Image 1 (cartoon, rainbow, N blue to C red):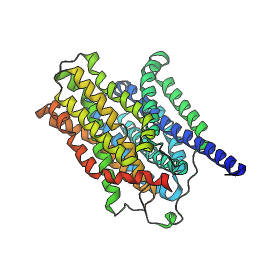
Image 2: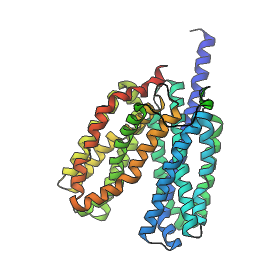
Image 3: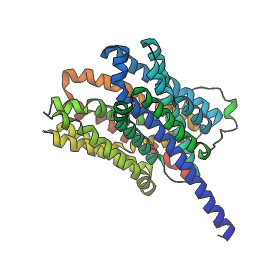
Image 4: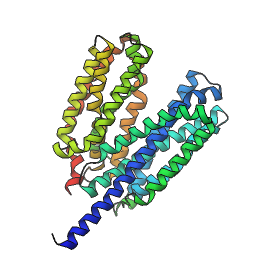
Length: 395
């Protein structure tokens, strides 16, 4: 390689590093908004004067908003590119927490919840599609670390939200969240990978894919995220009610799960580059299987928490690999494939926990956590399709 070519390669790699930073900031911002919403829920409920039932319906509206706007975002990504859709959805998302702080009644709150869920989901599709583009341009895996930044943003948002609301008030907290989101977006804006849609995409009729592959990868994402939702919503209750853990100790189940998941997401890209997506997915799936079975069969809270920690190691990179595969399917625009995978995956996070809670009333949570890993068997059977996650880096 001559000196000019070497310099060109160095500049190109530096530019792609900026692209990676930009998409990581998008994930950080999206996670920060989602995390910042969690500590606002009690104040939101009290301000509107509603009970748990109505709050549950409003949270359901959040999920419906996500499922409605995710496929629409995928269609626009196919026509306009992920960079434009990421920017537009991020701009709209930034003030929505402030909007929910100002809504005067349940009806306007329902509209606000639909918009918040919708644009969290729409931006999620767009930034995942952009991450796929950056993976292709860099010819290396970055998806796991992007999802790690989302987890970090959620942790920061949830961690400082209650503190800020207690110190400066609910409205100033919402204003601060909005300004910080816009600042993050301003930093990322000029560095976002400006991908372009396929020349025929603008002329294609918007429709769902008719081939089975996107739906099979969507099932991989769905069955990877249902157990994550189960640990999030029911892990603490299982530890406290069935294993006799104290209130303080019961919170360590999801904390251990989240800590190992975030840590392994930062390491996951290197593992995937070394082993390939298919082998990494299989190792992660088997690890998650062992962890959840251990949690379900555990005779005490300490062993169950250890099981949740092991499950976090495994689940950490299952969804990023599924999303990379969805964005690299042959003959399909990344936005469309990702819309299918994210919509199916997040529907598992949003709706499956309710079904799990209903079943647990009759069976108990130990049975749930022992048998829900059966979903991972399906992921293993479909794991050969993870090979598409590596295609963008081989072009």
